[in-house]
Length: 334
Length: 141
Image (cartoon, rainbow over all chains, first blue to last red; front, side, top):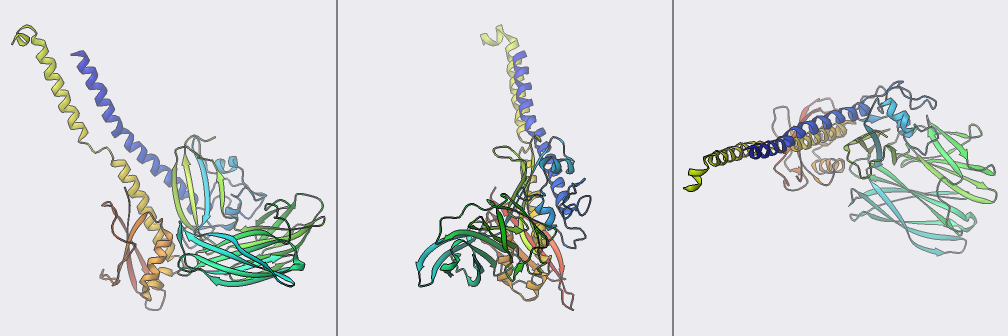
């Protein structure tokens, strides 16, 4: 009799446990979703913590102040989440401002379309070299028809061209670079979805033009866009910046130095990310460095690799362009 | 018969055993996956609301409805949702009469669990017509 009672009690507890844990999970999911939406829909305190490079937020919020649209994020608050930015918040800043205890928090932002660029062919001409690039555009792995606007930057050389991708998401771009512009060159591709101009993405590719393969981006300079200003910090004393370009789907600008280390970024009305290109030389080596405004893609906060967490995804608007924001919450904060 | 005659207590144990089986059987009737369904529904509902809000942020939704651009509207919704999500968008006028003659969806229904949300938008021209957009979403469970 005793053994039957014990057995029954154990089995009852096992079955009831699943029914008790269920609502707990639901409450946790709802609680964490509310936190993520608070961060998404509020501007934080102080409201200008994004553009003020020395400010650390007391309360974390990514929304643009006085925004009339839902899910509209502040471009500078986004930039300060990116660890490549010199004014980025630390994880402890983020966690402290989010007022979270025993909950880890992570952000990731990405473009809605992915662009891949492959050098398809190359041939030498009399005074120049012709390149053909294969551009593939896809969204969530599906090929996307998009219009393309591409820029080529090399030493003392800037040109642009238009094309579009076909139904298989592939388009080709032909460029010709003078042989006198030898050294690192870059191809910047903007792709815009035909059905919605707010879905505009960029892709950047550095390649050697009659020279060795270029060194990785950020080798010579650290570029930090914030508050419509591009801040340069050199990784070596022998670096001399020469030219700076601001490129978007619609517009291109030559920027001029406003101080030894800053450029003003123009306010562009078009719905497009801005790619900022700085050319220069390190001793006799020509280089090209680039970044974007806003600095997306980015990963910030806790790394939940192989850990259980609650994930909330949103389509957000930054300066008229759409991006995907993923907020991850859960586990023990570390 | 010898069993019952010599060990009368054993029948009580068997009775208790069957009673406990009956009790346990009744407990298993309580649905255990309620939280999974609710959590998924909550996430889908949030996604649906955000999709319609994002579409209407700059007047795209009302403009496409005004122009009866159902294909463009389908592509816009599709680009804001994961490919794993099934959707069906229906546009109603102020009297709740459907006005899209062609289905605005991305294929056949993939699950019986469907979440629907409604969103009211107004045309941005002088008519100020009112439309109701009903977005149904579902994912493979």
